[in-house]
Length: 75
Image (cartoon, rainbow, N blue to C red; front, side, top):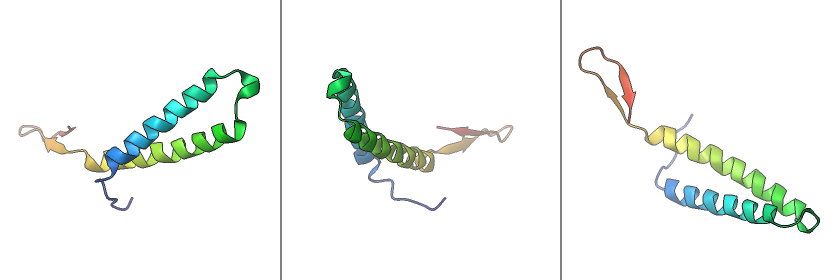
Protein backbone atom coordinates (compact mmCIF):
# COMPACT_ATOMS: atom_id res chain seq x y z
CA UNK A 1 0.00 0.00 0.00
CA UNK A 2 1.49 3.32 -1.04
CA UNK A 3 1.27 6.43 1.11
CA UNK A 4 -1.70 8.64 0.28
CA UNK A 5 -2.47 12.21 1.24
CA UNK A 6 -4.59 12.09 4.38
CA UNK A 7 -5.47 15.78 4.37
CA UNK A 8 -8.57 15.10 2.29
CA UNK A 9 -9.98 12.43 4.62
CA UNK A 10 -12.72 14.72 5.96
CA UNK A 11 -13.73 15.69 2.41
CA UNK A 12 -14.06 12.04 1.40
CA UNK A 13 -16.02 11.24 4.57
CA UNK A 14 -18.47 14.10 3.90
CA UNK A 15 -18.94 13.05 0.29
CA UNK A 16 -19.54 9.44 1.36
CA UNK A 17 -22.12 10.55 3.93
CA UNK A 18 -23.95 12.63 1.30
CA UNK A 19 -23.98 9.68 -1.12
CA UNK A 20 -25.41 7.39 1.53
CA UNK A 21 -28.15 9.95 2.23
CA UNK A 22 -28.94 10.15 -1.50
CA UNK A 23 -29.22 6.37 -1.67
CA UNK A 24 -31.55 6.33 1.35
CA UNK A 25 -33.75 9.04 -0.20
CA UNK A 26 -33.93 7.09 -3.45
CA UNK A 27 -35.03 3.95 -1.57
CA UNK A 28 -37.80 5.92 0.16
CA UNK A 29 -39.48 6.35 -3.22
CA UNK A 30 -41.90 3.71 -4.52
CA UNK A 31 -40.14 0.97 -6.46
CA UNK A 32 -41.63 2.06 -9.79
CA UNK A 33 -40.28 5.62 -9.39
CA UNK A 34 -36.71 4.70 -8.43
CA UNK A 35 -33.93 5.57 -10.82
CA UNK A 36 -32.00 2.29 -11.15
CA UNK A 37 -29.08 3.74 -13.07
CA UNK A 38 -28.59 6.49 -10.49
CA UNK A 39 -28.73 3.95 -7.66
CA UNK A 40 -26.10 1.80 -9.36
CA UNK A 41 -23.78 4.74 -9.93
CA UNK A 42 -24.28 5.98 -6.33
CA UNK A 43 -23.52 2.51 -4.97
CA UNK A 44 -20.42 2.13 -7.14
CA UNK A 45 -19.06 5.52 -6.11
CA UNK A 46 -19.89 4.92 -2.44
CA UNK A 47 -18.06 1.60 -2.52
CA UNK A 48 -14.91 3.17 -3.93
CA UNK A 49 -15.07 6.07 -1.45
CA UNK A 50 -15.57 3.64 1.41
CA UNK A 51 -12.40 1.81 0.36
CA UNK A 52 -10.42 5.07 0.15
CA UNK A 53 -11.67 6.25 3.56
CA UNK A 54 -10.77 2.91 5.12
CA UNK A 55 -7.23 3.04 3.68
CA UNK A 56 -6.71 6.63 4.85
CA UNK A 57 -7.97 5.84 8.35
CA UNK A 58 -5.56 2.90 8.58
CA UNK A 59 -2.73 5.18 7.51
CA UNK A 60 -3.55 7.86 10.09
CA UNK A 61 -3.88 5.50 13.06
CA UNK A 62 -1.32 5.99 15.77
CA UNK A 63 0.32 3.11 17.55
CA UNK A 64 1.87 3.02 20.97
CA UNK A 65 3.66 0.27 22.84
CA UNK A 66 3.21 -0.99 26.36
CA UNK A 67 6.45 -0.21 28.24
CA UNK A 68 6.38 -3.54 30.09
CA UNK A 69 5.42 -6.17 27.50
CA UNK A 70 5.88 -4.30 24.20
CA UNK A 71 2.31 -5.00 23.01
CA UNK A 72 1.21 -2.54 20.30
CA UNK A 73 -2.02 -0.60 20.83
CA UNK A 74 -3.85 1.40 18.18
CA UNK A 75 -5.24 4.74 19.27
